[in-house]
Length: 469
Image 1: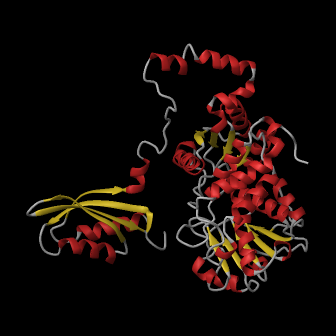
Image 2: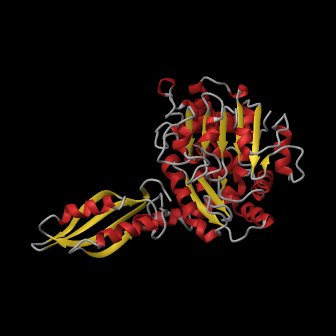
Image 3: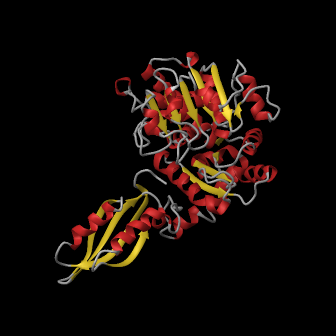
């Protein structure tokens, strides 16, 4: 349950009240007394005796929304006609659509856009396949591919239930980078089948965004597709998260006056996001990191290490710490959580080093209460929009793909990811930096363009198939 009312649980209650007296003011008081927040009150029909009113308010969750409705219903002379969940209304019929970029007003235009004129363009591409980037949507189109196995912290809910999330992702691509993205929800969780399906549809796209595919399968899927395809493959749950975390940490360390190579970092989470964050931190210069999963610290003395955990053990925890997360956090300069809610408390944060940095990114409930963390840490970031310093992947993936598509890049490299993180960090000017502003808003006008420019410059000759030196 959310701690405060949220627009995510916004409802509109259509009701009827007497035209005179205190009926209207009683509506507002009833919502507030139930713990809700009135965001709009609109009279939709007025008469001498009755008023029809739409009361829009924010609740904490669905049960709280029902409690608000019950509070309104209990008022004398109030008749409730309809209750609408505004989030569900936004999703009715889906959130995206296809539109033609060219007019089709007469036979001439139809003949050029389709047969017979289109045959000339198809033959040109058959002669020179590279022309597909110039003459089709390929140059600006991304496939957002999921199998529904790890959706938004909801778990393995399947491809149909994942579709609203993938639609939202496509809408964000368009809003923030002008990219035409399309959700591809696959009714299989077999690695070989996913790889083959994506390989088969790839000619129609300029890039592949893998989304909400569970670990460790996501690692193999991404690796195999990168080997097979001549377009960039980017798993946002891994690399988008890593870019945003590194950018935010870069600025957080500037605020507290520490450097990445010297700080001790304790991490919670060794899945897709955690592993990608770790890899990028190490590439950026981090030296002292301890990663914990649900069994405790990852170290070479454990006998349950798969390939991914073995890599973590080989590249972190040089002292061989074998205790739990609380022990790893003690004395650490930085805590980064991409794991589970409520696994730490304020006392754990108090045991960290002076001027500590806490990134509690589990969503919607963080690893530690942000309010408790802020009592002891110098800088706190979460994945939530109701606290300062929200770490949100939309800060990264639109600009990353804009740069990749503009450069006609065939791959994504670690150098590009580092460049993207550096550009994102530098969107926040030095004079703006502070404990409550280490990462820009997703609506900052310079975010996508700065990230895109950095990726485009980093891509360089690799757009023509060059390999990284």
